[in-house]
Length: 336
Ligand SMILES: NC(=O)c1ccc[n+]([C@@H]2O[C@H](COP(=O)([O-])OP(=O)(O)OC[C@H]3O[C@@H](n4cnc5c(N)ncnc54)[C@H](OP(=O)(O)O)[C@@H]3O)[C@@H](O)[C@H]2O)c1
Ligand SMILES: [Zn+2]
Image (cartoon, rainbow, N blue to C red; front, side, top):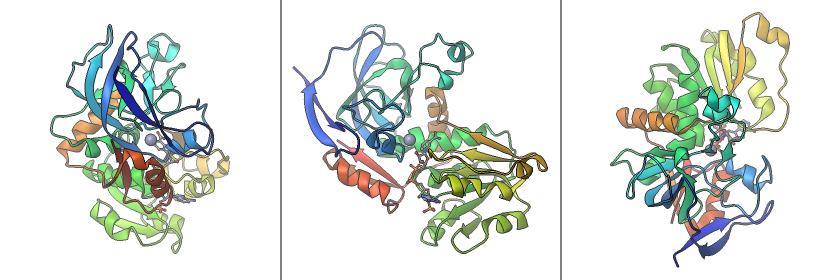
């Protein structure tokens, strides 16, 4: 009988443990994917920290790229040998009010990859066909993987703002998400501003498409952005509620603060800050497989690639620690 290996968390704050098991029989609509690469996203901390309804034991990982190895009954769209990807969106029900309106991302019964079902910290993953995206031929797995959450989230949130280039887009936090956000915003034709703590990332941020770099530990970031006329969009990937809230005053008229970083703490914003300039605060979560395919296509067209550091799957603990350290440049990727 065929077996597969997963790096699983058996409970809150536990280390990743290598577990081998028999590959289960595929159920209706399921696809067996041989994992080639899986990005380590900061949101994997939800699984590690016991948040967001994670169920143990769990193999995290929602930036998964692999090859279709086997199809269960009624698995549509894909064939054996196809290269596919899977992000945060682990499935939808087709039947709730959101799904019936075509808003699958808001599905009342959404299952999240790597939290509610096993993800890509593994040699194989079982996924419902509707959660999978096609990965373009010729795109390396370690390049495609981070695009399925970090890339998708930045590309999809920005393209849905309705703000037209060459408006000013600031990206707060230059990590996995942020370094791709700089590239998408530049490729879309915006005036891009990088907001980062310290100067370590300055050279890279300018290379990735920022026209301006603001060291938020030295400069008054609100004054600096207002001197440029205010930011039309600020994409907040810093997972700190105070740091995100503080940027509201840096928005231009009708400016949008896009909340992407995950934080359980409340944000603090004075209503007066919002109403005079008609500013918006908007959350955004990832996207569905067709958004992933658009992200991959746009990335290929504009030669947008993540900067990655590859670790073997067996070193998931080291890889995760490196991601947390803020020293990764910029996305850690596991390969079986
Ligand atoms: N909304 C979504 O769909 C979605 C999707 C994926 C991830 N996320 C969330 O987005 C966040 C970023 O994920 P990631 O994978 O890009 O993480 P990451 O690689 O660790 O990067 C996050 C960056 O945020 C900045 N930062 C960290 N702590 C901060 C603080 N206290 N104050 C200000 N800035 C701080 C740092 O940038 P500098 O060193 O440049 O300051 C860091 O590099 C996480 O909270 C993750 O859970 C959300
Ligand atoms: Zn993610």
